[in-house]
Amino acid sequence: MAVLTRLRRSENTVLIALALVVGVLGGFGAIAFRRLVETATWIFTGQADYAATTGHPAHPWLPWLGGFFVILAPAVGGLLYGPLVQRFAREARGHGVPEVMYAIHRRGGRIPARVAFVKALASALTIGSGGSVGREGPIVQIGSALGSSLARAARLDEGGVRMLVACGAAGGIAATFNAPIAGVFFAFELLLGSLAARSLGAIVISAVTASVIGRVFLGDEPFLVLPEFHVDHLAEYVLYVVLGVLAALVAVTFTRVLYKVEDWCDAVWRGPEWARPAAGGLLLGLLLFVLPQMYGVGYPVLEGAVLGRYAAWFLLVLLAAKVVATSLTIGIGGSGGVFAPSLFLGAMLGAAFGQGAAALLPGLGLDAGAYALVGMAAVFAGASRAPLTAVIILFELTGEYTIILPLMLAVAVSTLLSGAITRDSIYTLKLRRRGVDLAQRADTRALAGAAVRDEMTPAPPALRTGLTVDDALAALVAARRHALPVVDQGAYLGVVTSAAAAGAVTGDDDAADVTVAQLVERRAPVAPDDALDAVLDPLLEDDGADGLAVVERGALVGWLHQDAVLRRLAAAHR
Image 1 (tube, helix red, strand yellow):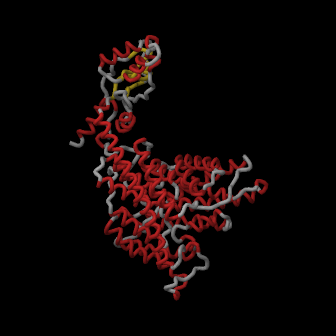
Image 2 (cartoon, rainbow, N blue to C red):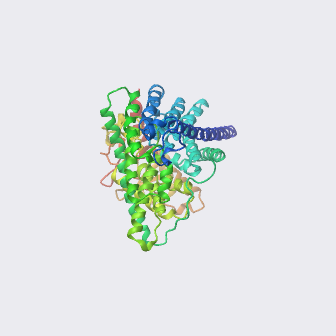
Image 3 (spheres, rainbow, N blue to C red):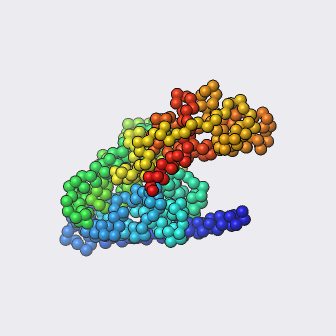
C-alpha cells in the first residue's frame, strides 16, 4: 500500500510538472503566433492592422497600386500557405478546433508536432494577407500539438496525452485573451466534454502559467476598456431574450453558410489543391477592396461597433459581409479560427439591435454597447454550444460584471434555440461531414443491427421491498453479484447494490430497521427491442449495478450484462 501511495504521488508530481511546462509552451506559443500575425500583416499591408485604417491607404512599398493592392494580397498569401499546408500538414487547413476534438476523442490525443509549426505559419500568412478569420483556433491547435508532443515524449498513457492536449489548448486561450478561467472552461466544455478532477488541477496550472506569461509580454489590460453598463428597467430583459433568439439565428446561419461555401468551392475548383487559396484569394481580395473592414481578424471594427461608431444599417452590412468573408477564407483553404468571427457577428448584431431598440424605446435610456457585448457571447454560444465558456470569456475580456444577468439570459436562449434548430455546433458539423460523430463511441459497428434481446440473459433473483438489509446482503452473497433487481407486485423498481447494503449495515442507524425499500436505487432499464449500440453508453457508465435490467411492459424479463456486449465488441477485432 505504501508503495502504491508513493507511485501515485510520483505520478501526480510528474503530471503537475508537465502541465507547468505545457503552460509555458502554450504561453510563449501564443505570443510568438501573435507576433507572426503582426509581422505578416505589416509585410502585406504596411499597416499594423489594415481593418483599422480609413480611405484605402496604399502599401508603402507599392504606392503606384494605391488601395488596389488589397485585391492581390490574399492571392499572394495563398501562393505561400497553400503549398505549405498541402505538403507538410493538411490538418492545418481550416479552423483547427475540430481537428483537436477529433484527436482527443478518436486518436488518443496524438497530434503530430509539425502541425504546431505549419499551423502557425499558415494562419499567420492567411490573416496577414487579409483572410477574415481569427487567431484563437490556430492558437488552440498550436498549444494542443505542443502538449501532445510533450506527453508522447514523456510516454504518458492515453489519458495523460489527452489531458496535456487540453492543457495546451487552455494555455493558448488563456495567454492570447488574458482569460485563464475561460481557457479552463474551453478545454473542458469544448474539447474534453466532461469535468474530471484528475484533469482539473493540471489544466488550471497550464492556464494560469500561460496567462502569467501573456500578461508579462502582452500586458494585463482587458480586451475592451468600456464604461459600466447597467440594466435599469426590467423590460430590458425581454429585449435580451429577443437578442438571444436573433443571435441563435445568426449563429445557425453562419454555420450553414460556412459549409455551403466550402462545398461550393469544392465543386467549382478543378485545379491542384495547393493553388486553390491563391485563385480564391482574388475573390476575397475584391470583397476586401469594397469593405476593408473585413481585412484580417477585425478587432478594431468590433471595438468600434461596441463604442457606437457605426450606424445601424452599416452594422448589418458588416455582419453579412463577415459571414461571406470568413466562409470564403475557409472555403478556399485558408487557415484560421471562427471564434473571433463569431464575436464580430455578435457585436454587429447586438449594436444594431441596441440602436434600433433605443430608437423605438427612448424612455428606457438603452446603451447599444451593452447589447453589443451580450450579442458577442450569444452568437458564439449559439455557434459553439459552449454557454459557460461564452459567459466567462466575455466577462474576462471586458471586466464587465454589471451585465452578467442579461448576458447569461441571452446566452442560454441562444444555446437552447440553436440546439433545437440544428444538432451540430460549428465545430462538430465539420466532423460529422466526414462521417465522425463524437456523440457516439468509436467503432461500434459490431453492434449494428443487434438488439438487447440478442445478448440478454435470464434475470437474477429479484428482491422484495419488505426484505431486511441482512436478507438482502445474504441474497447478494448467494448470487455472487454486486447488485440485484427489486420488484414490487411484479413491477420493476430498481436495484439494490452491495455497496448500499454494506453501508446500511456498517452505518450509525439500526440496520434491523432498514429494508430493501429504503435501499432501492432507481436505475433506468432497457427494453428487449432497444438497439445495442443505443444502450452502450448507459451500460458502460453504470456504476456497480452489474449491467442493466431488461423490462417489458413494466415487468422484469431479463438482464443485460456488460461482459456480453464487450465480448461482442472484442470478437469483431480478432
